[in-house]
Image (tube, rainbow, N blue to C red; front, side, top):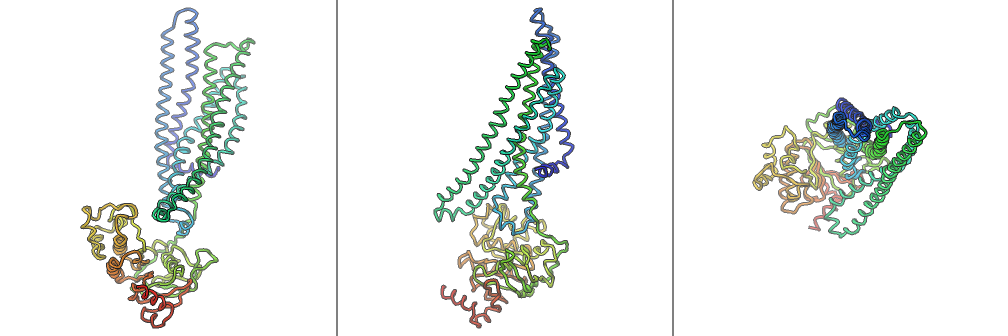
Length: 582
C-alpha cells in the first residue's frame, strides 16, 4: 500500500510548483473560512444583542462586519476555484503521461504476455484504472487530504482559544475516528479490489464477444453468453452494493450521528459551565461553538471519504503497476545489419512452455532471394518457426542466423526491421488507405504507396474512391473484400522493401479468381527477397526452391516440389489427397 502511494506521488515530480501553489491557495482559503464564525460572533454580541437592549443598531459596525464576512468568503471561494482548476489540469497531464508510458510499455512486452492476458483487461488498466486514479487520487486525495487536516487543526485551535477545557474534551473524537477508519478500510479495500478486477473481466468479455459476434450468432449462443455476462455483472453489482452500504453507513450515517452527538455534548457542557458560573456564555459565543463543531466534522467526514478514494486508487494503482512491472523484451544494443537476407536454423529446439517442446532439432538454410515453403498438418510447427525468425520468442536450444549472424545477439527491432509479414487474415487499422500502407512512416511518400498498389494490382482502389489514398478505413477494413485487404497488406510489405518476406497462408481465404490476382502480386512481392511461405494449398508452392515438410515439430522431408513428389512420401500423399479433392 505505502509503496503504491509513493509510486503514485513520483508522477508529481514535474509538477511540484503547480501542486505547491494550489495547496498553498487552498490552505489560505481554509484559514480565511475559520474567521467567519468569529465575525458572526462579533456581529451577534457587539451589534445585535446591544440593539435588542437599547433599540439602537450600530449600522456602521454591522455593515463593516458583514462586508468582512462577505469578503472573506468570496476570497476563499476564488482561491479554492483557482486551486481546484490547476489541480485538475495537473491531474489530466499526469494521467496523460501515465497512459503514454503504459502504451509505450505495451509495445515493449513480449508476445508471450499477450498469449496469456485478455485484451480487455489490458485496455481496462490503461483506460478505466487510470481514470480512477485521476478522479480519486490526484484530484480528491492530494488536494483535500492536507486541507482537511489543516481545517481540523485550525478548528481545534479556535475552540481552544474560546474554551480550552472544551477543546480537550473534543480530543476524544481522535480514537473514535481511528476505529472508524480501521473498520471502514478493512472492508472497503477488499470490496474495491474485487470491483476493479471484475470491471476488467467485464471489459475482457465484451471485447471477446464483440470480436466473435458472427460466430456467436451463427451458432445461436446469445442466450448462453448473456447468462455468462449477467453472472459477471452480477458479481460486480453484489460487491458494488456491499461497498455502497458500507460507504453510506460508515462514511455518512455514522458521521451524521457522531456530529449530532458532539453538538449535543457541547451544548450540555456549555450549559453546565454557564450555570456553574464558570463561563460567561453569550448567544454569539454559543453560535461560534456550534459553527466550529460543524466545521470540524465537515473535514472529518471528508477524510473518511478520502480514505474511500484512497482505497479505490490503491486498487487501481496496484493493477496499473502490476502491468507496468511486466518484464519487457530483452533489447540488445547491437543492431543487426542485413545485406542479403540469408537465413539458417541450426539445431533449433523450442517450446512455448519450457518442458513441452514444439520444435525438435530443426535445421535448414534459406539462401538469399530463395523461396522456402513450410507445409504440414496443423500444430506441426510452421508458425513457430516464423515466430522465432521474428524474435517474438527465442529458442531454448540451437541458433538462428541471418546473413551468418546469430539474431539473439542483436536488438529485436533491428532484426524485424528488414522483415515484413502478410497474414492469412490481414489486419487493417482504423485510419486511411495511406496510413495502412505507410504505417505513418515519414520516409514513405504517397508516390511510393501508389507505386506499391500499382505493382500488386490494386491501383483500381484509388480510382474507386474520390479520396484515393486518403479514403477512410473503418475498424479492421470491413468495407473491403478479403482479397482487397490482402492486396493492401501486400502493398504495405512492398513499400517497406524488406530483405526477408513472410507469407502466412496468404491465399487461404480467397476465391479462385482472386487467388490468381494475389498470386501475381506475390510474384512481384517475392522478387529479389528471401521468402517464407506457409501454405495448405500445395499447388501454390510448386515454384518454391525449397519445401520443408514438418510433422510434430520435426522436418521429415525437404526438397523441391518435383523431388518430393518423386520420393512418394508424406508430401506426395498430401498432394495426391488435395488433387483428388479438386
